[in-house]
Image 1: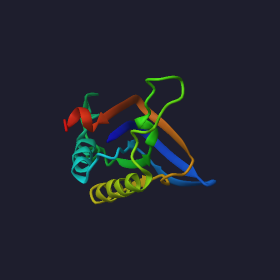
Image 2: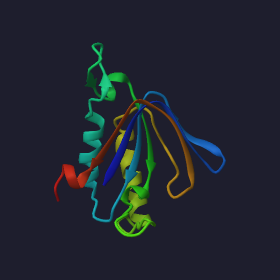
Image 3: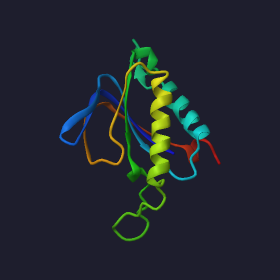
Amino acid sequence: MKFLIQRVERASVSALGATVGEIGKGFLVLVGICDTDTREIADKMITKLLHLRIFEDENGKTNLDLSSVNGELLIISQFTLYADCKRGNRPSFVKAGKPDFANEMYEYILKKCSEIVPHVAHGLFGEEMNVSLINSGPFTILLDSDEIYKR
């Protein structure tokens, strides 16, 4: 599982001609899922995400987590995080989770985050989407479960 996390001042996602999710200060999280992911891995990734201390405190130090700043989440499924570009110029996506499984895991992540964070917005799984954001910093972090939680 991969989470590409961007600290934002605001972000939104539109699909099918309308805005389907938007947030103010918080994290825009692009989520990539592979077929070997589990709910246990998702739980660990969510815990790491929600406790990342990457918001500035009163001294300008990145010392505050999402709840400390009343932050919001915009979570978008992004299978291209599993792009394999080792051969040729056209990426392969064979490492990305199969759509039914990936959607199930994505819905699980949304549900678990919504139990903790008051405002969780999201994109539409499998749809063409346009994402707008103001990246604060810029500050972008990639969490990869294979690197964090050795399987």
